[in-house]
Length: 75
Image (tube, rainbow, N blue to C red):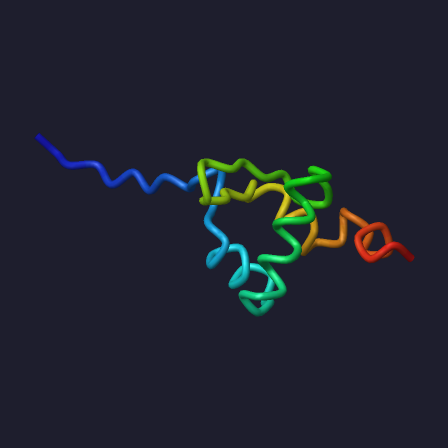
């Protein structure tokens, strides 16, 4: 029997991973995540108790510029 190595990429990540992906500090990321949780924009957020999970796709869209920054900061 051969063993197959299947690397699974999660659809949702935690706040620390989100901060690393965006190159932001943890405090700034938590503020972004809390605001996004209320508005579901610019990031799609799930919350389980006190734990947030952020959509990897929405992080990638934000980082790629698909989500306009001026909509995030109210410009």
